[in-house]
Length: 366
Picture (cartoon, rainbow, N blue to C red):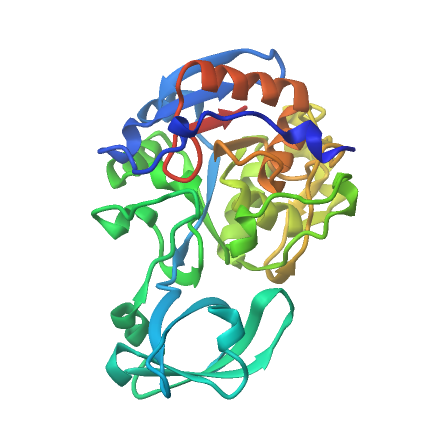
């Protein structure tokens, strides 16, 4: 499978540089996998496509103030440290600038001494292991000296930094937002719940690699990035109840998809239970299996790479934004939808001037 199959030409003016004024006023393209139909709605109309008993699965991760600008202790020269992954208490894997001048032994001072970063070890890809010295709570200090990082295609920061956080974000662990969730408002969530639709939360720590295009000629040769995830027993119970009742499990974002599919377990007895049998033989769709799977409480690291040919075990519908060309995210969406249909949808979105990427419009795939 060629990476070029997931390429498309996007006019630069369609890359959203700021969010819409009201979160739920973004456009919503509704794509039906079975019929190939495409509708154009507003995000606040989402409840029209959901039924009582369905379940929305959201990623509750919050974006860290992971971008640190400081000075080298000896020369006073400007230095940047971009936090990627916490290895253990005090130690982080990070990207640094300027890379040639930030070698092991160099100290970087942030916030007039509130935080000191010691470059401990050089890694491949311009990365470093950095040990931080400080007094008090590290997360609280980050809020003072750090900045919330934005994707490279966004050239200016929003006036309100909270617009790059979902309204339900709580676990401050990511360096990028689960952007499909940015369209939800407390009022919309309440309307969805009033319809008898449940919410389940998962956590996936979104990494910087989510923005990087696939560079290999063949998709199968790409080494997917790894991300830490958690699925609680409470959420697993909600999701499994939804599955047993033959209602839709709706993943909010590709990050939720990765958690759900990574946490899937083959439970063939469930497919033969009276409750499931009374509801029919199973659900079908592009990349979908008859229902034989549930999820289990899980915590770990996933390197699940989903591209066309993958058979989805848990997800019935997907809410997602429009993704970068040649990205693993577009490949995942293509696996769920079918490549021909998703590329037709993207071309229609371009023709109708949809807004793309993190601050852009949304798509519901059913």
